[in-house]
Amino acid sequence: MLERYFGASGAALSFDAARSALSLSGDRVAFHCDKFNTRILKNFEDVMGYEDGGKLLCDMAASTTYAALNRALVEGENAAAFAALDLRGKLEAITEYFKLLAYGAIEIVELSPTQAKVVSSHSYLAEGWLENKKRWNLDERMGPACHDLRGHLAAAMCICTGRPLGSFHCTETLCRAYKNGERCEFTVEVQA
Image 1: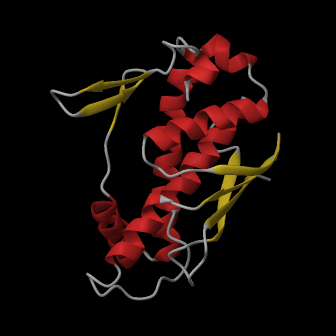
Image 2 (image 1 turned 45 degrees about the vertical axis):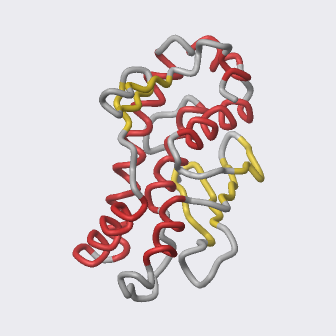
C-alpha cells in the first residue's frame, strides 16, 4: 500500500530476517508484544500514577516516532514524494506505516491543518489490555490505555504539517479497554 504514496522502492521499510529486525529509513523499530507492553503500561501507571505514567509513555512515543518519520519522510529518499502529497495523503501514508508496524488500523474521520479526529478499531495496547485483563486479574482502568498511540498520532500531525515536535496534543476520547468502548477514538489538536 505504501507504493501508492512512494513508488515501488520508496517504502523506507526494511526487514533483516537473520536478526529479526525491522527498520524505517535505517532506524531500527522494535517489534512489540501486546502482552509485554500491557505490563509496561500497568507498571508505569502503578508507579507514577495514571496521568504521569501516561504522559511519559505518550511523550516517548512522540519523540521516537517524530525522529523516525522525519528521517524517513522529510529528510530521506521519500522527501520529495511526501512533500508533494496533500495533508490527507501525508497522514494516510503515515497511518499505512503504522499498520505495518502493528500499531493498529487507523481511520481518518476529520482533518485540518490544526486538528485531526481518527479512530482505531484495533489499537494494539487496547487489544493487549483486553486480552490480558482476566489472565492477570487486572483492575478496571482509570482511563484510556493507548498512551503510545496518542504520541504516535501527535508526532504524525507535526510531520504532516511541518511543525516541530510538541506542536500537537492528542487526547483519547474513547477506548476499547476503558468502559467497554466499541473502538478507540482520538482528537489531535495544535497546542495552545
